[in-house]
Length: 397
Ligand SMILES: Cc1cc2nc3c(=O)[nH]c(=O)nc-3n(C[C@H](O)[C@H](O)[C@H](O)COP(=O)(O)OP(=O)(O)OC[C@H]3O[C@@H](n4cnc5c(N)ncnc54)[C@H](O)[C@@H]3O)c2cc1C
Image (cartoon, rainbow, N blue to C red; front, side, top):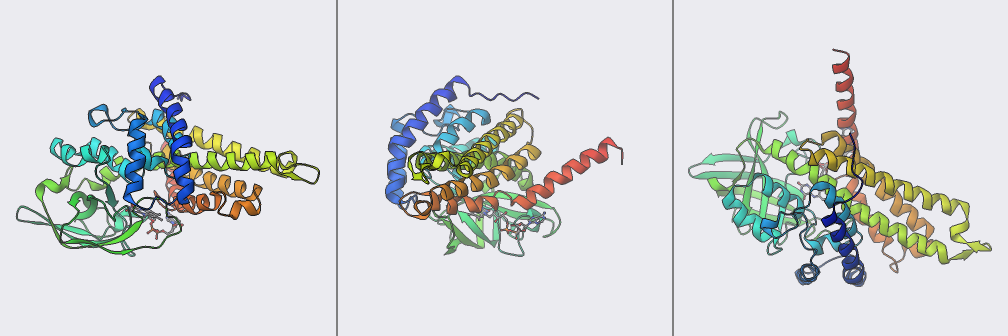
């Protein structure tokens, strides 16, 4: 299979304009705020500027005000947006809204698209995706899903507890995954529901203190306690939630790779600039072999991550599930981005851990990526199982 390593003409232009917009407009705001977006005013102001620069919402279809980029083209634009921690927020391509827009476009009814997708794509609303539960509920293993939805006259009643729900604070609606058949431990059936903020049966129990702070709205624990919703709150078909989660997760984990690869490129730029200026032991830091090795290893990790992302995009754009290639890209990128940021910080010495550069913040922001969208171990387990299945099929076992 051939993989096109170049963007189409629309994406090429958009990526160039995004790069300029992020460096000139977003990075100064990010540096002023230490990478933590804070208030909604910041989000709205950055999004207004992105609209003015013509780079807003590149992923959604033109019908909803975007540029309708396919996955391959997204890679080039999202990497440029990811050069700043606040770039994705400015372009309205940050998690979890970006993944939710993708899923709503693919699955929602026409009425749901008008009500939820259109304002979300315009940046007028925010959303979150509630799947993970405190132990013993769903985490790496979705089959442990314990939140239930039971039919009641005219709708459904949802009960359960979710945690680590990014962006829940201030979200206008929640896409919640609940069990509608079977029992925790067996696959059974799950269903996705659209729950509006203000539903008296849904509330935030606490804001979880975490290592990372740049994802807008933080991460919350939520309680669904007799949360009733009408029939038209069902997203897609009843009992098809696990299948829809895969519709969301393959592309969503790949776009996460794109955004974090942007931060890896930024870290490398900071480190190279420092190594090119700093004099040590009678030469520039950049001319000392062990520093050259770190710079080269960064470049290799960045290039390999970019290639694996494009491979995954090619599979998704062809309409495949991309199960294997997105798992491979996600596992490699999450670990490579961490390595690049860590080496870059090392090259900068004490400056690297200071607040004068954002490398320490980048480390904190990228570390959780080895856990969400599937921990590395879950992906390695799935990758190996597919390889062994392929072997068994080839040898007719
Ligand atoms: C910053 C952040 C944001 C998040 N945002 C969201 C969100 O918006 N919505 C949402 O629903 N969830 C969210 N999550 C939750 C995330 O999806 C889960 O943390 C993830 O699925 C892992 O589940 P868990 O934490 O329950 O870990 P567990 O399932 O308890 O796994 C613990 C560890 O077990 C190991 N492990 C897992 N599988 C295997 C295996 N097959 N073989 C060997 N070892 C294995 C791994 O080391 C893993 O880290 C977020 C998490 C974080 C950290």
